[in-house]
Structures are given as structure tokens and as C-alpha cells.
Length: 260
Image 1 (cartoon, rainbow, N blue to C red):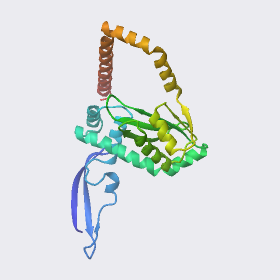
Image 2 (image 1 turned 135 degrees about the vertical axis):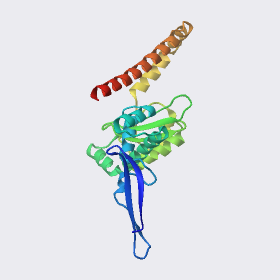
Image 3 (image 1 turned 90 degrees about the vertical axis):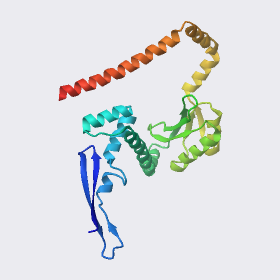
Image 4 (image 1 turned 120 degrees about the horizontal axis):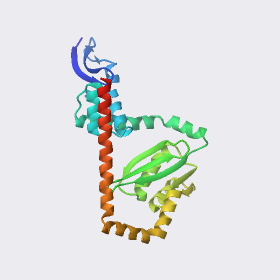
């Protein structure tokens, strides 16, 4: 036996525990033998188990909980005191492992696409202000998210690189559905040669609406702005959103008190 190491481990299943690892050495002192079970509970250099990471990730991305809320849930539900930095680190780790799982499941995804006779590629990107675009590629029949990446803009070069990854992962689609952005169309033509393009009805109608009603819309917008109605509406909307969040928090706490 080389030595025994103790470390504090935080888990959702068992709370705070102390793990004692016995490290053994070969007779020639050339090889160390460490625990096989411990790396399955948490990764090297971390005191928080994988189930903590999954809990934080699901709360943040599926339940839409904020970092502070997740801290409270860990404290109240699992009796674990976790810093905001650690919660944020676990949510990023959750995405990292989810991405690895996605790519490692390429064969299963391809099998599903083959069983349904191919796939339909839906492409769109969103952004807020001057922030990077979030490109999302969905499969139209199954609803699978095939690929997602942050890009600086909807230029053909950035999009072409993303579409090349999809082609390598799954192959060419039966057709592609997208808006009328030139960058998307150019990049799709370069990567998926001769694949049919279908313009998204939502984007088509929205663009037609802009052409037909843009002037009237600006008049209404200007009137609302001059009367300060638009600003008051935004304030009221923000107030009711905050009120709704506070009510949900109070209801959760009241429910916990009742259970206790």
C-alpha cells in the first residue's frame, strides 16, 4: 500500500461525505493502482459529484432557474452550500458532457434518420443587440437538435464551417428550411449541393408584412412613444414579471414550510 487519501465529496444522493481512497503500488514501484469507483462519481480535481452537475444543469437549462435560485435549492433540498461560481462551473460542465454524449451518439442518430427515410434540416440563428448569433440546426421530423454554435454573424464563411460539421456527422438532408438570408443560402449551396431549399413561412410572411405595413407600424410606434405609452407598457410588463417570480418563490417556501 502506497498511501490513503481522504477528500470531501459533495453529492445529491448522499449529501456531504468523506471518501477514503487507498492507493496501492506494484512490487517494482512502477505502477500505481487507484480506485476505479471514485472516477465514476466525480472527475479528477473536483469535489462535486456528477449528480450535482446534472442537477445544476437541468435546473438551469430545463427548469430555467437562475444561479442564485439553484444555490438555494442545493441548500434547502440537499443541504449543500455551493458558491455561485461553482454552480456556474457545473452548468458549463453539464453542457460539455451533453455535447460529448451527442457526438458519441452519432451512429444512433444516423440510424434514426435512416429509419424515417432521411432528415429535414431547419436552420435559424438568433441574437440580442450586438451579441454573437446563436445558430441552431434542427431536424424537422423528429425535432432533434442536430447542432448548435455561437457565430459572430450570419456570413457564409462561418455558416459553411458549421454545415460541414453537420454533413460529416449525419450526411446531406432531404431538403433545408430557412429564412431568406443570403449567408445561409450561399453556405447551404456550397456544402449541400443540389439540396432543395424551402423558405420558412414565418420568415416569408414577416418580411412581406414589413414591406406592406412598415410605414403604418412606424406611425403607431411613434404615437405610442410620444404618448409615453410604450415606456409605461414596458415598465408594467417588467413589474408583472418580477411579481410573478417573487410569487413563485414565496409559494415554494410556503410549500416547504407546510411539508416540514
